[in-house]
View 1: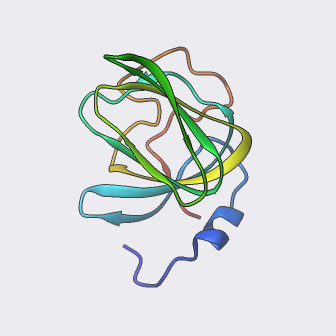
View 2 (view 1 turned 90 degrees about the vertical axis):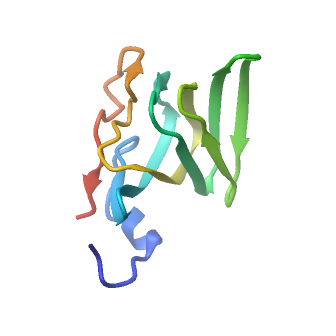
View 3 (view 1 turned 90 degrees about the horizontal axis):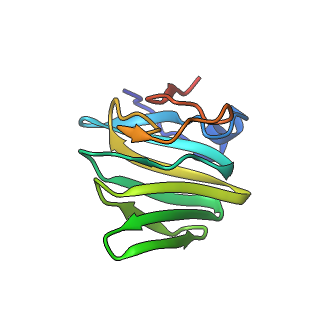
Length: 130
């Protein structure tokens, strides 16, 4: 675990890959991950965990398939949203964004079930911040 403060702007500047989160720290059994995003991710679901999103810069859209139907939640800088476990969702960001996510360590970025993963999406449990 880090024993020094982490500057998120410097951490984000240390990599360029989109949809490829970096683990900046851990809190108990949870990862705090940052990612640069652009374009579309993939429809997916986390069966056993919620997923927390905080937009650090830019705009993030979350398409959701809920019992009441489909809807899109749009998040701007400084806004947060939690996707409930069991909810199919597809993040996207036409103009690009930097985001922070909070989820249990070992959670796969494409969930427990997902559509075909395109080449620009990194199916990972997060990469250590280098």
